[in-house]
Length: 144
Image (cartoon, rainbow, N blue to C red; front, top):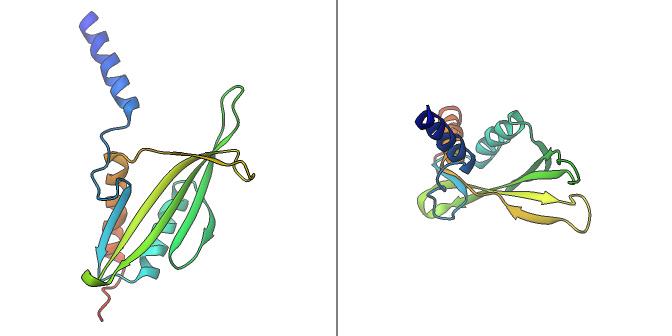
């Protein structure tokens, strides 16, 4: 019985850690897709973000900024989980790199915003890999 209880505690505590860090060149969540138009990839990534409960704060050809409110506990302010998604062309390899920076923002919407980076984990990277598969399946191949 004690052994089962110890194993349960280990499993629960390891689940809180969120998984191993993402193994990417930037240390952030990222994917690279070849021969895909930026506007098609941006539309699919934006739809995936909105489907996860974020609202789009701003959007242009090269980046999307989205956020969602995380309610604070007792005596804490609400915080905003903010994603900044960059769409970076890599012309030397005819590819598009999508990099996501995630931050927890306190005092959002004021001049006193403070940013705490959210650690990119392998689990979150796997969610982004699903988005990459969706991009490759639904976006037409771009030829020069």
